[in-house]
Amino acid sequence: MDIQKKIADVIRNKKTQLPTLPVMVDNILSAARDEKTSAQDLADFIIKDQAISNKILKLANSAYYGLAKEVDSISRAITVIGFNEIIGLTIGMNVVSTLSQDGAHKIFDMRDLWLHSIACATGARQLAKRVKISSAEQVFLNGLLHDTGKIIFGTYFSKEYRGVVEDAQESQVALHVKEGELLGLDHGALSGMLMENWHFPDSLLLPCRFHHDSLACPADYRPQAMVVEFADFLCQEAQIGFSGNPAVTNPEGVGQELGLTPEDIEELLQGFEEERPKVEEFLEMIT
Image (cartoon, rainbow, N blue to C red; front, side, top):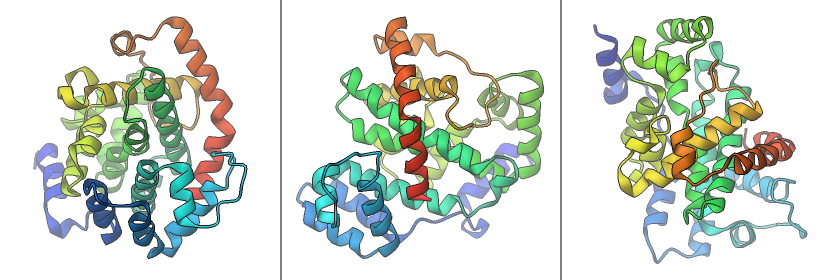
C-alpha cells in the first residue's frame, strides 16, 4: 500500500487506536467559542481535572511567570495569567500528556522535542507581541503543538520514519523536506490531519499545518503561521531542545514579511537564550 494512503488510513480509521483527547478538551474548546463564558465558568471546567489543576497552579507559581504573590486557586491563575492563555495551556497540557504516552521516543528524545516545542511557543508569543499580532496567546499554543506530526510518524510508522530521520541526518537536508520526498507529506501536514481529526478550530490547525510553508497559509491565519515558522527557526538557532532536524534553514522571506531586521533577529536570539531556564522549568511543570 502507498505510504500516503497508509498515513491517511491511520488518521481516519477509528480502529487504529489513534490518540484521543479527554472530554475536557472538547469542553474547553466549546467554552472558548462561547463569548458568554466567564473566568469562573472556565475555572469550573478545569477544577474537574485534578492533575491539570495542579499543573496549572505549579506553573502559575513558577519562575516562568515570576508572579509576586502566590497563586492558590484556578480562578486567581486565570486572572493573573490570562483567560486565553489558560485555555491554551489546558489544551496544550492534555495534548502533551496524550502524545507522551506513545512510542516515538524510540526515534526522538522526547524531552528534547518537547523542550524545543515549549521554546518555540514562548518565542512565538514574544515575536507575535513584537510584530503586533493580536493573538499572542493563540500563537503560543500553535508553537507548542506544531511538531505533533513527528510523534504520529514515529509512533505509527517507526520503521519508515527512522529511515527518513537517518537520511536527513546523513544528507544534512531539512527533516520536513526529506519527509516530503520519502513519505509524500511533511509533519506539518500530518499535524493538520491529526488536528482535523480532533476537530480543532482553524486558528489552531492552520498555523501548525503551514509552519514550514507559512506564506502559503490561508490569509486569515498567515501572520500566525509566519510567526510560528520564524520562531521555530530561532529555537533551532538557539539550540534549545532538539526537534530532530539536522539542517536549520533561515526563512528569510518570512522574516522580511514580518518586518524583522538583522538587529531584531540578533536581539530575539539573545532573548531566547535568556528564557532557557524558564523554558526548562515549564517542561518540568507540564510533564
